Image 1 (tube, rainbow, N blue to C red):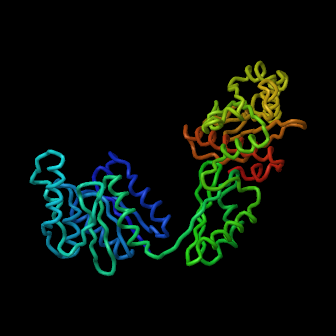
Image 2: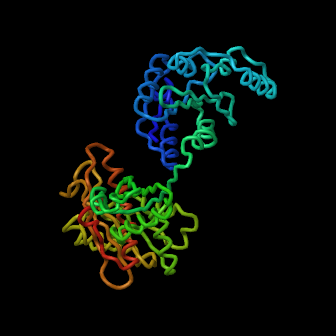
Amino acid sequence: MRVELVTIGDELLLGDTVNGNAAWMGRRLAEHGLEVTRSVVVGDELDVIVEAVEEALSRADAVIATGGLGPTYDDLTRDALAKAAGVALVRDAALERRLRERVAAAGRELQPMALRMADVPEGAGILVNSAGSAAGLRVRLGGGVVYALPGVPFEMRTMIDEVVLPELAGEHRVARRTLRTAGVWESVLATSLAPVEAMAGIRLAYLPDPAEVKIRISATGADAPGLLDEAEASVRELLGDVVYGAGEQTLDRVVHGLLAERSATVATAESLTGGLIGAELTRMPGSSATYAGGMVTYSTALKNELLGVPADLLEAHGAVHPDVAAAMAAGVRERLGATYGVAVTGVAGPEPQDGQAVGTIFVGVASPGGEPRVIRPSLPVPGAGPEIREVLRRMTVVHALEQLRRVILGLGAGPAEASGA
């Protein structure tokens, strides 16, 4: 089942309204095994809407159009579907009666223009809108079908779930699961998972975020759940400890869980991230049980005064150096009395610092016994301009939490040093 989306409205084209409907529909349809192959936005012009619908039907089995079903003269979806089908608009008595009843129940006077919402292309199916006034439409054109739904998000979502999905998904069985990884390039993951990609009935999707990649596994067929279990087991076997969680198990939650199991705590010392690691570690309710606290030592002097980083080390190498990261991690662990200490220092840009290039980052993790672990993740520098800073800072947070996870579990540094994202 191939589906295309047509979202209608000048407000979408002009940027007055963000097109959240298309994003929501794409996710929702994919959850039910329906392949969204294209999504377009068009304005409130009759012939443009007709053209968009006809082009979409030339490729897809079904088209879902949202918007343009209201009572005003710029709501042209009904007119466009009638023109595409070569039929007239006719007044539906049941829809008119429903409109009058809704208006009367609200204690308002029906405006003549509102009755436009009772006009439908001749022969069209009427879709009940339990969440609003404007009914949806089902129009069969050629070998496909068009579902026209209101653009109001709550109404559209209700009709997708109550009407469209039951009709389109039918007996098509699909099961999905998402695994989470950190510190590995998307291309490296895809190469490793080639054997899973080749499994019949299995499809993998890679959803990258800064320094993280979620792997969505989709299984279809009569035994979709069993096939999904088999594919997940294969993914975990091929990737090993690179997989840190599944579903809604975010990295901060995983770290807190590992700390809680060991009655352990962590403290943070941050330079370039300016408190972002601490913010991430305090998102979860109850995080105070495992997060001791943190220090933002942005200036070089404070690294010495608050964390005890040797002054001669800072003078010789500056703030961006692996030994500085190690000393920061050990210092914050000692001063805040935590089981583990995590520290980051580096250059987030957009300009180099102390002779170090943008993207030079060091992550240190101190633990009971032994020397602190320090890694230098290889971070891609995302273009130019101020956006570099935020992307690199977010990547640094992920690498810091991932190295903490690996240290707690007694794992090696992993691929971060070589790949970094």
